[in-house]
Image (cartoon, rainbow, N blue to C red; front, side, top):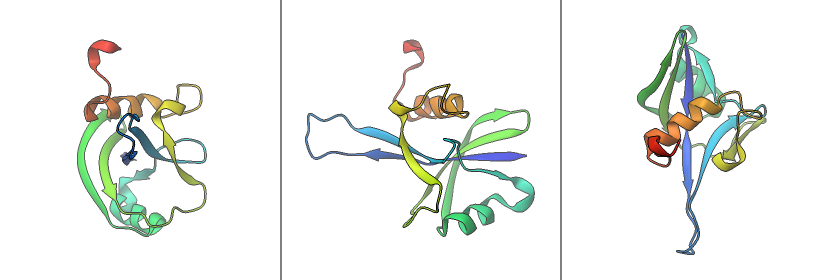
Length: 115
């Protein structure tokens, strides 16, 4: 079973009129961190990012894949990892776009009836 780890950050601006932005942790191919359960998801994540992880709940399940919310205080991102604004992602440039869009729904940033 593969687990996609969804780490989202709300970038807040000091200007009240500015819109808050949501970013997601992705690799250089704009894919979510994905780990196989056989290797221990927590151990694999913590080895790669050198940070403790706290798991939330699984919000998406497919045949051989689960997506789970998580939080981690990552001090320095490893090479090939970055945060990407949700507004910069789409189906063409992000293989995991559907999972990320569902995460945005669960977080309350996208309403079901607006889709």
